Image (tube, rainbow, N blue to C red):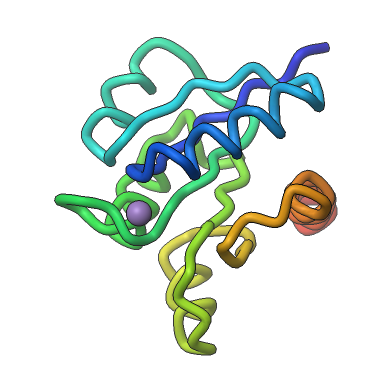
Length: 128
Ligand code: MN
């Protein structure tokens, strides 16, 4: 079964790379360049996973995560923060905002999908 990822990322190169890697591993990718575009895309589908850049124009990723978590249809959807903020506190902030896990930028093509899958496995286990 094809899984769908919603990718919320304003940087075109990062969007291209993440889309490429996800599609290579069988995901269908819907990309949004900012939170508002993501919220309107979510009127039409429910993704299996959401990849969320933290540094976004307009609403930042923490704010977007909080809004996504308010949507009943997304209560169980894993949200993975993807950010270049390497500060320890940012991980906690992302988790507090409703993210299930955290991937650090720059995206490493060799480990990105494994990191995504690790968060997905952990999210499924913690929801049991
Ligand atoms: Mn960004």
